Amino acid sequence: MCRLTVVLSRVTMQEVTATSRHYVDRLFHPDPQKVLQGVIDMKNAVIGNNKQKANLIVLGAVPRLLYLLQQGLSSSELRTECVVVLGSLAMGTENNIKSLVDCHIIPALLQGLVCPDLVFIEACLRCLRTVFISPVTPVQLLYTDPTVIPHLMSLLSRSPRTQDYITQIFSHCCKSPEHQTVLFNHGAIQNIAPMLISLSYKVRMQALKCFSVLAYENTQVSMTLVNVLVDGDLLSQVFVRMLQRNLPIEMQLTAAKCLTYMCRAGAIRTDDRCIVLKLDHDLKHAHELRQAAFKLYASLGSNDEDIRKKITETENMMDRIVSGLSESSIKVRLAAVRCLHSLSRSVQQLRTSFHDHAVWKPLMKLLQNAPDEVLVMASSTLCNLLLEFSPSKEPILESGVVELLCSLTQSDSPALRVNGIWALMNMAFQADQKVKGEIVRALGTEQLFRLLSDPDTNVLMKTLGLLRNLLSTRPHIDQIMSSHGKQIMQAVTLILEGEHSIEVKEQTLCILANIADGNTAKELIMTNDDILQKIKYYMGHSNAKLQLAATFCISNLIWNEEGSCQERQDKLRELGFVDILHKLTQALDPNLCERAKTAMQHYLA
Image (cartoon, rainbow, N blue to C red; front, side, top):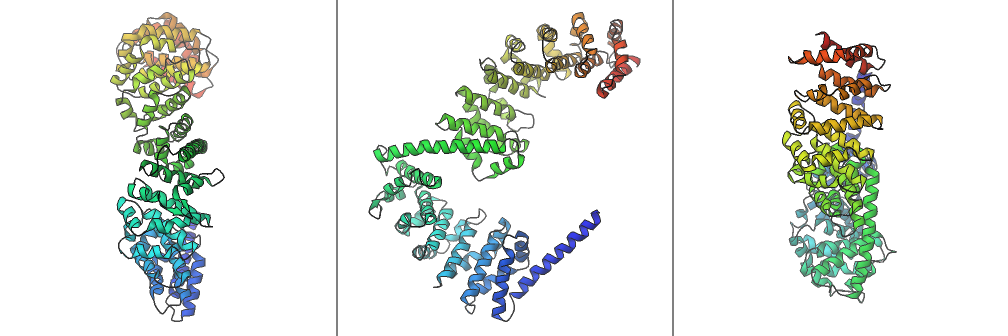
């Protein structure tokens, strides 16, 4: 079956390559009409077909198409169709764009703009737009020839399409103060300003985006904009009108950007009543929009790894979410941290995006001073960042987070107490003795045992989890039990005697099993007949989980790798544990049965 699949895939690949070769071969036909028809057929074949696009590029279609569009003998229709195909190829993958750029498509298309045919010019501009908006295209290629920018300015008035494409090119290729200066010096403001009142929404929107890019941190541009008139109105007033709620959100936010940049540059007075009131209104609206967006992303990414990946891979998205943590609006901060919490459920994102953007830093800052609702979500996110596979765990530990988390465990809010102890539990997992010691010192034995009697079951469970993680590896078990053994044994006794859930008692018995694994700590169990009787009771319990956890305790106590085991084994035999183990070897639960058999083998060894 597998072999058949391989054969079929090879045949299919050969057919695709043969078809692609046929399209390329037709570009070399001596009859111009057949070449035209071949280009048209190629255009139809590549629409939405990235595999076909890649095949044609590999087979050398691009150099031939560029040759045909630059040939003076080619008809206007053929040249236009060639550009349309090149534009379609550019809409494929980033590798397609790289191949086109390497074949010098940009100079060829720029040269085509001197042609008087408007349809051909629009096709060239559309293709140039597609190439330049790709992140892999070097924007400097637009500025190499000093005649290009002024020529593009002269083409702005030819049609709404030329306006749309050229302003998009300018917006995407204006990446530095030097680029802003070049565009400014060639009359970008005067040429683009009339487009703000175009009948075409697309043209108005692209013109607005272009102004936002030109004015960004540029005093010269901002000071010039303030004096520009558009159909008798100051440009700033045109921007204010674009903030109206009935207009598309994209337009409102971009107009607000332009006004903000002008204010920062001192071009608009910050106490201008009309501007301030409108910006304040828009700022509230923008906060609502950001809050809604973060909530949506949080919801989308809550249970879907693929969607979480798409969110983090969206350009500047992580930066926007992180910046949302320091927003003036509490609702936006809460929505941003909720979004981070949703994304932090991904192991992959914890290892990559969260580490790359040092998310833990603004998160820690947020935890210093925030309302409880924000603290709950921020501390919950921190719990995930402290998991053992998270690269953020180490720098968080070094930042002095232990004191902060311990203070959360004293909160009146059960959710904050849970998160504080949960984070400490994650921190203690497979930690070295220094970290564990710091946790015990900062939390204090009084607070630790107060948490072990917390009325909230979630708090109690996480505290038991912390204790279990602290009591792992024999040297750590012995050291902690030597200094806090009496209190820990008292707390364990109270929990096992109390009215608690199966899960709580199972976790408590697991802690006893860890203590029983210590070299010296196990004597605290062996010398405590009350605890031994409780272990015996739970070995005979009706719940298999409790039986298994209790059996682990005994298994560790009778482990015979060192010389002092005989005395313990004799005492446990006298108390009837061997008889119970023998019965459990017939248990229906396979795990319990296997553990009992292992324990019996230690007795017989």
